[in-house]
Amino acid sequence: MVDFKNCMDKAAAEMGVNFKGLLIQKASIKNGVGRIAEDILGWDCLIQGINRECYEFYVPELGHIWHPLIIRKECPIGIRIIDSYKVDFKEAIKIFHEYTHEEWFVAMRLSWPLTPECLEPYWHIRSITGEEVAIGADSGTPST
Image 1 (cartoon, helix red, strand yellow):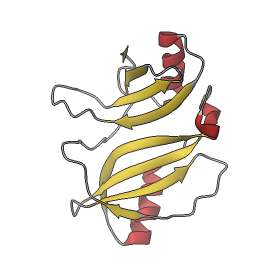
Image 2 (cartoon, rainbow, N blue to C red; image 1 turned 90 degrees about the vertical axis):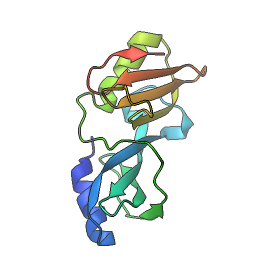
Image 3 (spheres, rainbow, N blue to C red; image 1 turned 45 degrees about the vertical axis):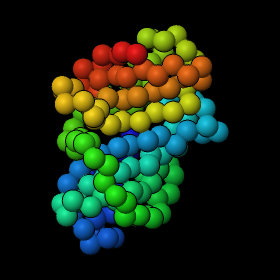
């Protein structure tokens, strides 16, 4: 898995901006549909800077070349910064398969839900049939 701290440091040096943390991470899936972790090609990341501005850039998985293209974006309202999480995307995919018995997924993202009572960020994985599963990024607990 890609070291996001390293990628954030590279992007910060490129932009001359200090980053506060990760807001959203969306998977780029090979051919638009995936079955295993290796089908994830990379991640579109939305990062908040300490200046309260947001920046978006693509981070490839290991084995792919990284060409930084950093775009300044408006920050979404109400999304919390993800400081850390325990369940990586590979484990989240395994949990998705065990919970849904679905073979294919078409979308995957990591974010902190907009509801204040949530105690952890969540992986959201959508199956090819449209079922969306939320998996706690700290607890590993799935729900629909």
